[in-house]
Length: 420
Image (cartoon, rainbow, N blue to C red; front, side, top):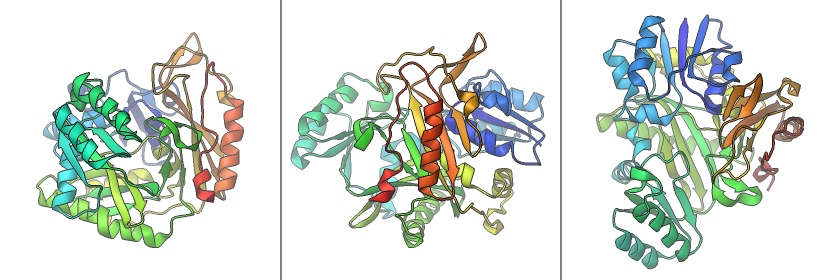
């Protein structure tokens, strides 16, 4: 088979790396890819939002299956367009991708179908939003309604911080049209976790739970990023909790989307908070999470291609998805200053010193004069597999020590929540 993966970040590197292990694939392409991806697939310089160009390429090269990594092309309707062109593609339709593309759509769906989530209100007017914040007090969560690359969420510890966030989104338009409408939510306390699932209509196959570390500094301090590291599975979360999440949240969500006439087909990401009142949804994504993918896929035993093909042919229900009895930890190395303004163009050293069972998934990199150089906020995801979490964590940090670039920043406490 010939397979095309759309995207060029750490998540896509992990997806391509996993698909490359399938004996059924004889040619893998990635658009636009990155230098790390280029080691396992042929990179094509078409950007993720050039949907017609991507479809033309798929036709010309007789691609059997296209897999979409990032949210932007999904929200722009890449799946709808490919299907109209008679091309096989894995991912949710534009309508189903609204579950991520609009926070308000997702909240309304949860309220309507009694899926547990934080209480909330949506606003387009600054004064009204501020009045709501003052009425409810802090801590409180302010979210840009649209896609803001994982950075449109502010956990305001004080009313002043909340006011500042509302100003940024509604008045100074810091997130463009994504922030022209905001969702103001009650602050949920508890342990955070992510449950990714393969979903085809009302059939749901959960992956193993993972936990991301969003804030930039140790101890969950500083502003939110797109994620500074992850680990999986979660020894502190028992299997009965995962079953409960499936029964109360993920399966009802899939069912709700079918009833609403926009069945979800693809990877559903459910971000959860385990509160004292039980699990509640923080957010949905319409695709693999980044960097959760970098720990979940290395632990997947079943051929990823088999799962995708079974989904598309309506056989997902019958397929058993198997997982390795091991642990994985991913530490993100980011550019100095991220998630604020950061510099790029720094030479990365030590990449070839990292050996199995540790991998480097490249996220924000490019090539220049024969060197791999930094080209993004989150630059590398260093993932290690171990027999247990401690071993995986030690291996990941050993590998991080071997890699360097000017201004490299990483958290040193990834996975430590599992030990509390």
